[in-house]
Image (cartoon, rainbow, N blue to C red):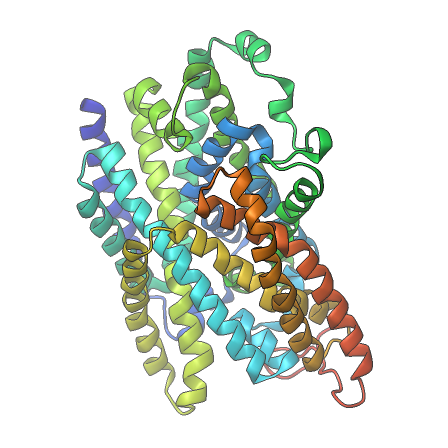
Length: 500
């Protein structure tokens, strides 16, 4: 009980701290560019911190520990391993180019390269995806408050949601960045300090080495291409898709692009992204390793989702438990604030000028701020209504990949990429992907023993690989056949100047 009370007071102090940052940051916001990309003034450490903190949420911590408990490191190929690969590829090949282009949202890229139709489609898909992500994150507030601080689920949900709304609405990207950096430090401290205690409870390195099979540390598929219960062709497709969907699918997501655009220059954008990938892999492996070692400490756990909370509550001493609890809440808030900011900012920046082209910067900024709680509470309503929100959220990320993944990558690096090719790739992606989902679903239901949610999740991933292959072929062929009828647009920056 003492643990819970101390953790509660520490949580209260932390929330007061982030609210203070929100009020302070609001003074630095003068226009919509300040609000969305922090005036493009972020140095290396702030850019590094906000990328790492935004991507590393409670899903990676709690979910990663759960998946590793059940499947070893193969269970975290999607995230953090595949997601870390995405950040690395983004840093190596895309961050510096986007920063030179000086866009404000990823939809700006699709407008410049492919026209307004692709801009609107990109914006709609992003808004849907981030509302789904926000919904799943807000529900987690209730879980964390109830388990770690003793606050009832409904009250914890409301407190976490309101605090995050307030500082995000006031300070925009400035508040998000500053709190992200603090949140990253707190969570990193808590999770690193927890490791020695978990090792000790497990019996030390000798016991861990003797009782944990080496296969639990492998990220390669098992015999007959076994992966997460699937074998043969289905196992191979699921395994490759787990790398591909995360490794390539999130390259054009607004949360990652927004941070590259917020850096003070192209060099900072690139190297901060690369460093974030390394940091993401390093920190992301810690909860997964705790999950693996917990198979010794809690060998008969019925629900692996509780592995991290149970380890913390039962075995961490009071000071470490307190830091760990605040750190877990910080990790959640660092993702929730970003997901709240994106729908409102994209509507204000990309949609409003189409409807009301003569709005002042002050009015657009005000509308963007007002939309933060609107989208947040709409997301919360969706989460409370949809029991399968976790899977709806991941379906949203797949939609981003199917709509803009191929046009984004080829649009940056292939000068022959044109509007017709982008539209063709979207059509072919969905024409192949959706029927394949229903085709593989019966097999997935057998593997998942009739659990529809998990079977749908698996089918969505397995069907993604052939869809993306066909979509890429369609993009290339269509572009080559329509060069005269639909000349490719050059890659221009926000002022209409060419960028090499």
